[in-house]
Each structure stands twice: as C-alpha cells, then as structure tokens.
Image 1 (cartoon, rainbow, N blue to C red):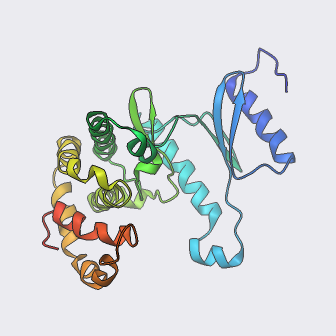
Image 2 (cartoon, helix red, strand yellow):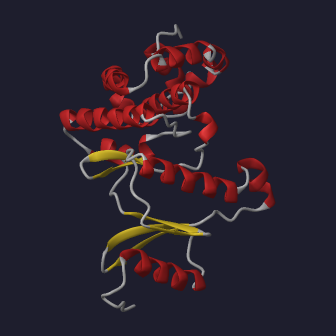
Length: 248
C-alpha cells in the first residue's frame, strides 16, 4: 500500500490497521511500513470456556493499554505506544525477547550483562512506583540500549505498591530460574542490581512473600523429583526460596 509522504507515522499505522482489520488480521501481527517495523496487538477472542479460565480479554487489553500509558508518561522502561484505537495498540519492534537471547548467547559475560540490565529496568520501574503484574524475560526486549518491559495485561494501578512490586520481583526471579536455568548463578547479583534502584523495603517484602510460599515447595516435592526437564517450573521453586533466604 502506498502512503502519502505527508502522513504521520501514527496516521500511516491507523490506515494500515483499518485495512488489516477488514482482512481478518490476527490478534498479534508484525507489519513493515515505510517508517519501520511495528507490532499491532488486538483484544484476544476467546470462547466461553477460555473466558472462564483466563478472564475478560477486553479488560486485559485495557489493562495493557493503561500500563503503557502510565509507563510512557513517567518515561519508564517500556516502548512508546505509536498508535492506538478502541480495538488496537501499535508498538515499535524491539527485537528478540530476553529469554531467547539468554538461550542463544554463547558468551557468559554477555548473558550476565543482559540479565543485569533487565534487573536494572525492573528496579527503575519499581522506583517510579509501578508494578508490572507478571514480569518475565520473555516479555522483555531491547530498545534504545535498555531492556524494556512488554505485556501489561496483568497491570493494575491498585497493585502499584510495595506488595505488588515484591510479587513482581519473585515472579521475575522464578521465570529466570525456571526457563533460563543456566542463569541461576547470576540471579544473586541481579537482585542486588535491582535492589540498588528499587524502593526501600521491597526486598524484605519479597522475602516475607517467599516465607508464605514454603508450602508450595513441600507440596510439589514429588514433581520436582522427575528426571530431565519435566516439571522444570516446580524445580525452580526451591531455587527461588533459597535466593530470597527461605530454607527450601
């Protein structure tokens, strides 16, 4: 499709979204334009069964849009919304996600640097007063020489508190331990980097949360004994409890 050179990037993308909508475009779509590569994200279409399991997709979409608005306004570690409408948001392409980069990177020093940068971004977001809701390396990408956070479908302003941020930190460490087990040795330093930026008392709140989760480790011991990669998320539980000073 040809666009007038006088169109702004936002107008160009709006026209593209409208065209793709008429073509029954997918929920998440990568598009290339004269202005670069972008991702269009739309509300998920769920059956009644999955709506009962996952919740209202429209509410999740609005939570995500609000999360980007709040982080963008505060100049937080998130990509800028390029365009938006009632049924879509458009984000710039930020490259491969962090989980993938940690997997393919052969240089241990580079992997460590990537993880520490991610911990720094999470700490800066917390320092600004926000909580992500469910941070994971698979929802972190590289933009303007920093790790930025995506996927704010669990964002809720009511969780922008020390408690919500502590939950963020535990969830993020758990996702690293479970899905990037070769990075477990760097997690202690990553938490220190996060703590240098995060609000006072956040680490203590995370440790308190882990003490309340000891039952999950006891309950899943049989699954943790499975060989190989089976039950890897359950096997990460004692790693995270130990990381936050809770005997597993």
